[in-house]
Image (tube, rainbow, N blue to C red):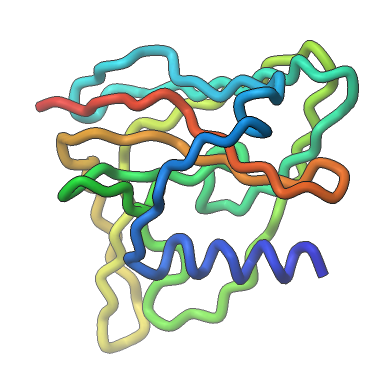
Length: 168
């Protein structure tokens, strides 16, 4: 049931162009979990390293969809608001039936995990004979941040990374 709810959430987060207010609540700021990138400014195509550190006294488990980076999604700042944007590009192109293969990631107390994203988006071009031609593009210059949402006990937690910029 949790996976179904997360799948539906991801569908709406990635598939719909709604904006996300960036509220900071006392609960979010009091959690001792850190979400940050290795730098504040990147050139287009430069790898971005995302770190998640668990400073709690218990494990946290993230449910990561293949279209996410360690369970985190990407937000882009545009016209004064934050909008969900794709990290990797097309996940289920050309009307293919795709069933997300979620991966559980457990972070033990004191552990930091990291992963790199090279800003590459895989764009699918569908052909008449059901073949797919793939194209790679890089994220456009702008202001971005990662958003991580997970459940801790029965509480839904939303965390934001630092803002970072991609330049030409």
